[in-house]
Length: 244
Image 1 (tube, one colour):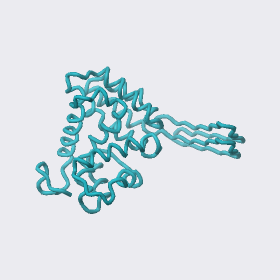
Image 2 (cartoon, helix red, strand yellow):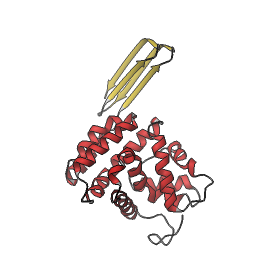
Image 3 (cartoon, rainbow, N blue to C red):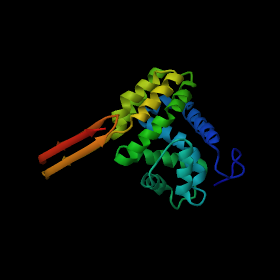
Image 4 (cartoon, rainbow, N blue to C red):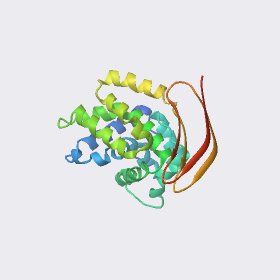
C-alpha cells in the first residue's frame, strides 16, 4: 500500500482509522456545492466515498484483492471475490493517483449497480453498514436536511433496481431516525437479511417447463418468483417454502 500522512507506516489501518477516513470521505462528498445536483448518482458516489479508503491505497500495492477483503472486513462489509474483481477491472494496468481511484470506482459502481444483480445486492448491504455515517455526514451540511436525504436516497436506490430498489423504503425510513434509533433499526435489518429469492423468467418467446423451487429460511423475507413476458411461457411450476 502507499504510505500516507494518515498511515505513514503503510500497514493496514485499524478499524477505527478506516472508519474515520471513510467518514471524512463522506463529509467531503456531501459538502460539495453541487451536492443537490448529484441525486442521480447519490448511491454510487456515496459508496465510492465510503469505500475509497480501502480501495485507494490497496490498488497501489500487491495482493490487491486480499488487501481489499481485509479492509472491508474491518468495516463489517463483505464483498465476494467476483464483485471485487469487477470493481477492480477498470483500474487494471492504469497508473492513477489515489484521488483518481475514487472517481473510477464511482463510475464503475454507477455502471454496475443497475446491471449486475450480485454487485447490487452486495453493495446494498454495504450501504446498510455505512448508513449511519452517510446520514451524519449529509446532515453536517447546513444546506441539507433529513427529508432531502431520504427522498434523494430512495429515488436513486429505486433507479438501481434489484435489491437496492427493494430496500429503498426501509433505508429511507432509517434516515428519519436519530443516530441511536437508526443503529438499532440497522441492526434489525441486518439480522433479517436472510432474503431467499428464487426467480425464473421467460422472455422473447422462450419456454420454461418443469420448474421446481425450494426454499428454506429463518426470519426475514422468503420470496419465490416466476415471470413471463414478451411471449415467454412458463408451465408446470412447483414451489415449496420451509420456515425453520
